[in-house]
Image (cartoon, rainbow, N blue to C red; front, side, top):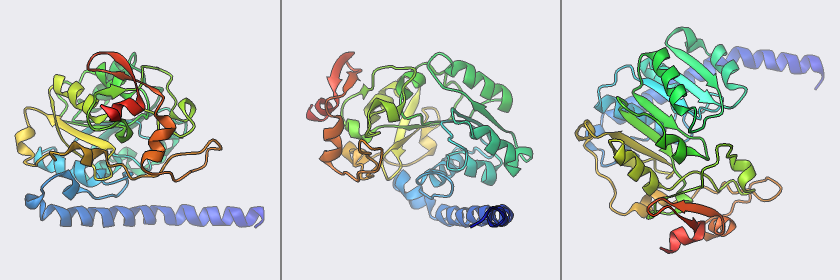
Length: 309
């Protein structure tokens, strides 16, 4: 294919892409409307899942929670929004005219937000910045100033997440979404040691060593006034609502927490950086000797030990 042919193909793609995106949205919206008709029979958050732009089923879960909490036009700050193509806030923006403040270290976040046709239809802004416990408060303030408040906070940085969230002021926020590491087990409150320059791809070749356990986030957010209400089905994003409104959700939490750490995604890399498709205990063996902090007594522990106790 010569240069002129490549330019022609790119031009055609640029012309049809808006319609493709529109069709994706309409199909997703129809799925969520259909799902909502039976929402009174939902047993847990898994029943609310619908994927539109999110990586898994977070679009449906967040729309369901907005419905239950009467968040007609929510204000969302998403920290770890990537390039804003696959993220947790985009569908809420298009479906509920949500205001969105998207944050990520990626250089293409800003250009994609600037090119997004919804930029003039609602409050949509981006911030390219490396997030740390030192600047999280400043970022939250910028988001609040831009949108006039925050209803939903989504945090997915694959690294220093626990330490960042511990320094965040979460007052007047209704919903928290945070990614946890299911490979750290269902029982102990553990996290990777604090490292404000944490890079998942550089810490270990497998890309499996990052973040904190679900119990760690449950304990931290309970202290900040939030109740755990469940996770997505795949088992990596946990959802919390303000304790003052939790009665509106009317869903049960699974008694066996191992259901929330039954991680079947085979995303481990080999030393060449390619997917190795390891599953089960073979993934855990790769990182079993790496250090964690047991937050219950502030003592060092290994990844493998978090499962043994």
